[in-house]
Length: 112
Length: 113
Image 1 (cartoon, rainbow over the protein chains, first blue to last red):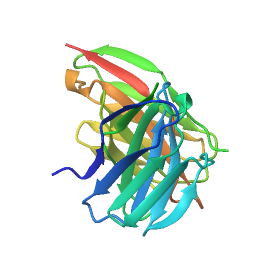
Image 2 (image 1 turned 90 degrees about the vertical axis):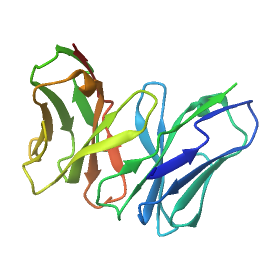
Image 3 (image 1 turned 90 degrees about the horizontal axis):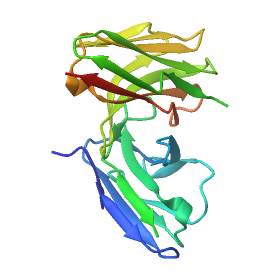
């Protein structure tokens, strides 16, 4: 059973489009995250939700809007996609903010 | 602002060798430190988590140490195997910021048969 699953795995789209990435975890964790890994493989946190409440919003453009319908889901919606948004986006979850993180397998976004 | 540095950026060793990966961080006020493994095209897998009050953690052939005051951690891999080939990342969780991890850029390890 996949612990943290995100879809789609690959996303190729044109500049200006709006797209969503979905994430679900079946670990019973109360905290979920979105991380961005750029072309240099550097991982940076974007958002963190604890019990559906936004905890971290790390200077991410307003075009990125996370949505947490329940504790097991954290979706990422991106408006007006730009070339610089091309990256791998990882969803992760943990129990509280203190425990090990469990990552999804990533969504490779390519904006043309 | 916390900065995490990993040295070396890449390492190639023959199978069976013991090796050490290094991680340093600029702000010693950390809550814990994690070592992750990332395989190509996949997500990260947490290997070891060391709390700030601990000196080391062990899991199988892996041993991670933490010297909080000097801002350093090492990951020791014993008797390396080709299956250990991956990128290894360390990440620190800052005191007072429990939900945020700051990552290093990783060490790409290749173990040659």
